[in-house]
Length: 130
Image (spheres, rainbow, N blue to C red):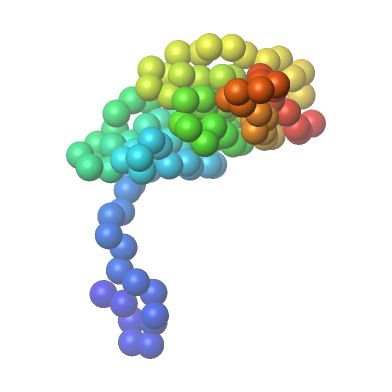
């Protein structure tokens, strides 16, 4: 219950994270029915909001995952890590499709807005960090 004078709304759902991990980034899944979140120990997790249960979890990286980047159509998921890799992950299976060795801690990725353009299609991703 909110304290007197507190205008904060009551939460609709509280999700407890892994006890031995710190959550660094979180993104909505397709149709806002799931959440993807990344931890400080290189784990990527998918949580089903309807069933309120974990769908899948996988140790994608050897070190901390800084960020998750999803394409607007939810078909591509990139993880960027302290281990120097950016990985293109299949969002439904967590299989690694492609990995980019950045050689330095990779902080973030940006997907070209032209990745699905009908004319002049560009399969580019920008990586940053260091």
